[in-house]
Image (cartoon, rainbow, N blue to C red; front, side, top):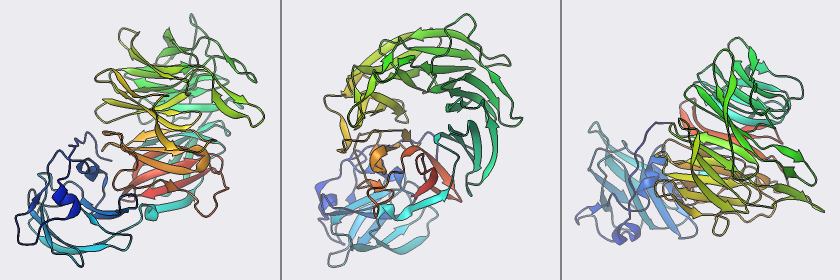
Amino acid sequence: MRRSTTIIFVTLAVSVIFGIGCGNADPITISPNAPGVAQLAFLAGLTARYSPSTTEVWIGAPPGFCASETIVRVEVKGELPRRIQSLTDGSFIYKFMGDESSSAQVEYTDPSGAKHHVYVAVTDPSGGLELSIGSPGLYPNRMNAIDDKVWIVNSGDDELASYDLDSLDRESAVSFPPYSNPWEADFVSSTEGLITTLFSGIFRFNTTSGATTQVSTEGFTPFASPNGVAILGDAGWVANPNPISYFPTEFGIGWVSEIGIDESPAVVAEINTQWLNPQNVITDGNYVYVCCSGTIDFIPPDYLPAALDPGGVHVIDPEARTIVASYELGICGPGPMGLSPDSRYMYIGSGVAGWLFRIDLENGVVLNDAQNPIVISEAEKTYIPFIEVSDEGLLACASFNTDTIHFIDSWTGEVDPFPFFGPIELHPDDPDALWGPQDAAFVTRDGEEGLLVMTTIESRFHWVGF
């Protein structure tokens, strides 16, 4: 995926939304500030989608598709042709009333000056779905896409294994102690990094040699079921939930360990958290963000997960080693985090419901918490296992127990934006199955951009091509 993409938001004029105008009139000009243009960067090419909720058909092309500010002619059967002016970045968008069978003829000039006349028809966003295209190891938990490989933390096999990104064939693995239950990894380079294990502490690893070195906690609190890890510069930051008992579940004071990454990796500092059960850690290159879930227990007789006390997010200044901001989200089991490309908006998934929470970090405001969550799924027995954001700002997450992938515009918070007008079900013909989407990564495989999804119960790779 491309890096550092700047996206401008837009609001379509009524004439664009409903196709008012004629072929000989002045071209319809799209304002660079209208809803819909933000999603053009999500496209891989000229695309037409149908929105059942509004009975509109959207046609759009990504930046660089057309010449800058050129005329695009769109002809829909039964209507007069429309002339649209592309934006300065060569993208365009057009909406008209239609259905699943709608199509259009599009004439445009590309950046080289060549003219094209193409046919575009509504397609189903799930048309790029390819199921069971490869198999990770036993109980895969997390994935890291680096260069032409994807590294999988296989918790059941006690290993960090690499797979060719195109073929998804297994290539090599770094092994860890038996029954250590590796949980999450992050890389300081293409070959080295840190991995947490629930039962054997933390290790520095080298994927070339297969060597591992256990991180020392001398002078500091021993690791307590370390979970999330994020590397910033030459230091790793790890969340310690500190579980004391289960059924009923009880946590001690949690903390974050800072780890110096050198030939003798060791804890160099630790910071206690305000809320219980810190599990997730990410960084934007400047700050370290830690999410505390609060106590989550499994309540009989169905043993469904339930949040019992509040949770929230801490912002840590890594140089000062202090918490500089805290955001309480309520009793909702907050878990995995993701950031918009400009690091302004943070999204947090719930560990007890199909909900997302949102924080405006620039203004220090919680926009969506337990009282007004962004509802991804209404299912009672589900949660959000991961949040992944593309370089263009498209957020992907999953509803675990319903095996569905959802998309959100991380700039606006819009759920299922263009070109995704609904969740993508992994197995629509078998609604009772449970594959368990555990993690995903935006990658390019065989020249195609898309989302690589990993399921942990079914232990398979799946592909959503764009």
